[in-house]
Image 1 (tube, rainbow, N blue to C red):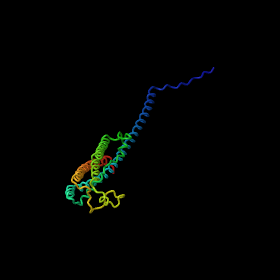
Image 2: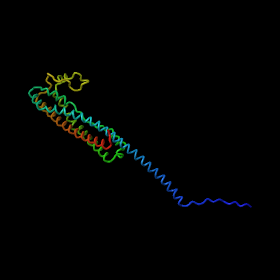
Image 3: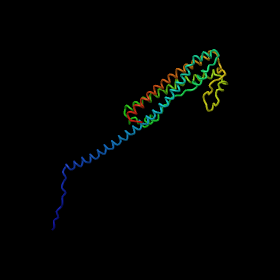
Image 4: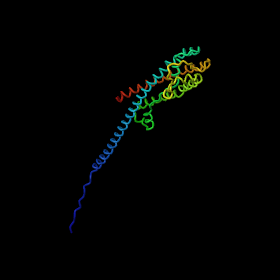
Length: 249
């Protein structure tokens, strides 16, 4: 009877299994590090995109703020003539400044932030992607903008409403309506002078009320201009900060 010999596989040393385990562990760990690095890079890039978007919003804001500061400065210069105008009207004389004062007190022009990027950061939880100092500066900027908006929606608008209501009590319709050549397209008086007396009431009670409100309006828009200037300075400083830090154009 023929006897067959069985081939036996040599047993591997325990160090072989250890090396296999270490190689597998290193492969998984390196994969984890690579994925974590990739996610970090993606988040970092997304954070930079948010900053760049906010940077563009700031430039839009400063353009609008510069215009409004000039707009309010013009109104303040005109309304600074209220004392002399009041004296003339008290004597039933109508100075040329009266029409300019009317034109510059008929409407407000409030400021609204271009909050596009701030809304995205808030809704998408994007603030976590930004360096803390950058996130804090954006939050502080939004807070200042909201404070300005709150002022505009309260005293700023209330003063305008009060003045407009009294205007309707003291200004005569017929001569005032003649100041508009095309009211559908030109919402403010476009005449530079009028020969007709504009006051409907000339008694001191209503004249005093109207000019008290004009003076209050002057004080309020002066305060508003100061707020616009402060906010514009803040926006300009943030533009310079992000431009230098991220090398924006």
